[in-house]
Amino acid sequence: MSSIADEVSRRRTFAIISHPDAGKSTMTEALALHARVINEAGAIHGKAGRKSTVSDWMEMEKARGISVSSTALQFNYTSSGAAEDAEPSVINLVDTPGHADFSEDTYRVLTAVDAAVMLIDAAKGLEPQTLKLFQVCRHRGIPVITVINKWDRPGRTPLELLDEISERIGLTPTPLFWPVGIAGDFRGLRDVRKDEYVHFTRTAGGAKIAPEEHLSTDAALDREGDVWAEAVEETELMTEMGQGHDQEMFLAGQTSPVIFTSAILNFGVRQLLEALVELAPAPHSRTAIDESERAVTDPFSAVVFKVQAGMDAAHRDRLAFMRIVSGEFERGMVVQHAQTGKPFATKYAMTVVGRDRETVETAYPGDVVGLVNANALAPGDTLYDGAKVQFPPIPSFAPEHFAVVRADSAGKYKQFRKGIEQLGTEGVVQLLRNDVRGDASPVMAAVGPMQFEVVVARMKTEFNVDVQVERLGYSVARRTDAASADELNRQRGVEVFERNDGALLALFSDKWRLQYIEKEHPSLSLEPLVAAAD
Ligand SMILES: Nc1nc2c(ncn2[C@@H]2O[C@H](COP(=O)(O)OP(=O)(O)OP(=O)(O)O)[C@@H](O)[C@H]2O)c(=O)[nH]1
Image (cartoon, helix red, strand yellow):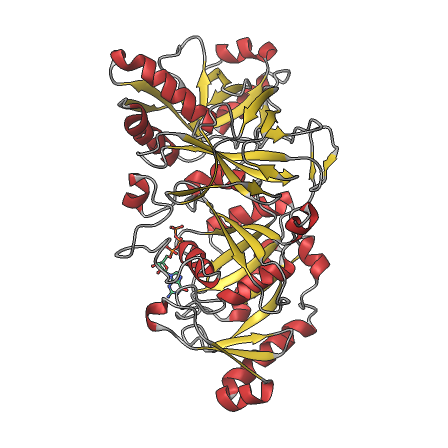
């Protein structure tokens, strides 16, 4: 039996951050294809015309063609250079919702990973959502591997794309695999560190792994001529400027290894997997609220980062996804829930790939496990065994959209309350209440208005309640305290609420109103909340 330390060292847990449409689903599928989880591209995430996709849990996702919910995909991968008897690497890919309105979900997902792949469309370069998610990675100290995708299509030049990265976000790109052929004429990659040419051959419809041929520099020059020479020249230019890979600087978030890919043709995908195994960090210790460190080899502990329900109409249940921080997890073990001090039985532990669930028997740091019917668990909660540990809560984003929600029919009040409570605990929206509005019409607070649509859809499908949503004219929230609440409530354009986590929030119609009140009443306590881009 291998030790926990061995299990940890072969694990890599990462997420792909990208702007919608950069190719995240296609890349996920290509990675699964290379790890031989699937035999043909199209089985997991295939869009139009192909089999249904893993993340199409909700009708709304299908209608909009975006991923609303998160999933985790685990697969084994044997690195090409690995010894014959070596255990394969275990890759955990945690899916992130792409749409900006779900950035709060994405933020939670990023608390569960040790590295990120920043996927960029070669024709578009850095896009707003990528930028925002990159800032979250930087804030959390998550190292980032850069992937420039869609190289099979016309796009910008490699140097232009990399300049943009260093200039706009101050991240130094260090090429690992450089394209041979301009965007739109993707012939292969120059392996910068080995100084060899990896030539790819297309497969029909990009459904299979693209065969690779490895050629020496001379053979590459013979085959590709100037196109090869240009790739060499460009990469040498970068290395001369000090832009060679440096593991320490990568882990410190100062540099980012770069790979050019075509997810749709499966070019460069194996190289990405190799880079993840070779360079991305294995799971490491985590700091608890009391500043102590929970080492990966300590007794079991985990953080819940996502709670989700209604993944399948046939299983009307909630799944809480936890990322294991330390120790060995065995299904059936009774662990402690730090927030309530109550025991929690883990009889129904699952790994989930889309609608398919598999019972998980054991899991290790870095792994993601879904706990079924985990009604007591909320994002940010800690589960542990042995010595008590509690990890810091996941900060809630500053909401910018507010709306009253109420049941269409008074007869449905009980279901309404139950449903709204549940969605609030899951973190679909933040819930705000005050005595004036009462329990029948709580206020939902969200980072993006599509969160309200999720509430409407889920209230109907899961709780059988039609709800009405009425937008409110507030746009700024501040945390306040009980001593300030009365004075704030007397102000025009301000309303104070208690949020479902117990915090007191004051809502303001706009930032000018807020500034005016801060100036007129400097003694009031008004603290900013974490902004989405902080
Ligand atoms: N030519 C080309 N097209 C690609 C490539 N990767 C993805 N695409 C296409 O780009 C479109 C978007 O790809 P997706 O994989 O759905 O992108 P996504 O980032 O998952 O999008 P969201 O689900 O909106 O987050 C699809 O039409 C893909 O077929 C690529 O490497 N080359």
